[in-house]
Length: 166
Image (cartoon, rainbow, N blue to C red; front, side):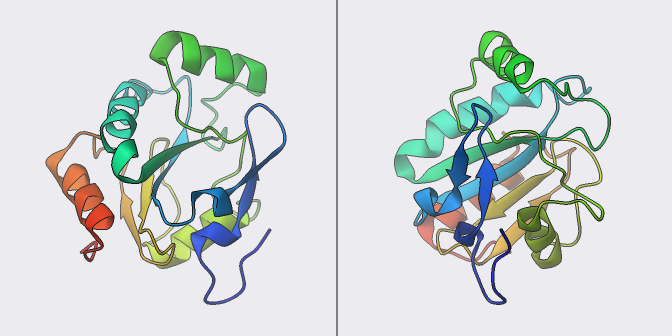
């Protein structure tokens, strides 16, 4: 589902990891941290810090959204296996989308929209896009930016407070 020009992140819909729609409109008014994830990557341990970030800021209006992708050939193609891995190894409770392409000509329209607003598509797994509560402003964080880094935490706090993401 593509957003109209001038639309917001809340205009998109993904499939959920469990099956069925995952409408971003359900998160309207919340800040989103959209992360393309993979189970078999050197950065997979970032799941732990993503869960802590979600737990810390969810009550204040942040939703971490994991989006498994096999674009870098480091993810299972079995969604049940992905869910089991995330739950049993990392205790993930934040929403997870189904397998999604995040770059190139097959990129989901959400990721094309995010890339156009925040410096390009993910170059690797665990690339992070922070979206403000209005669903319009987006800031990108590379794979190497840990979820608990002062830079990312400060940006989350700014997004939650309604300040610019600079």
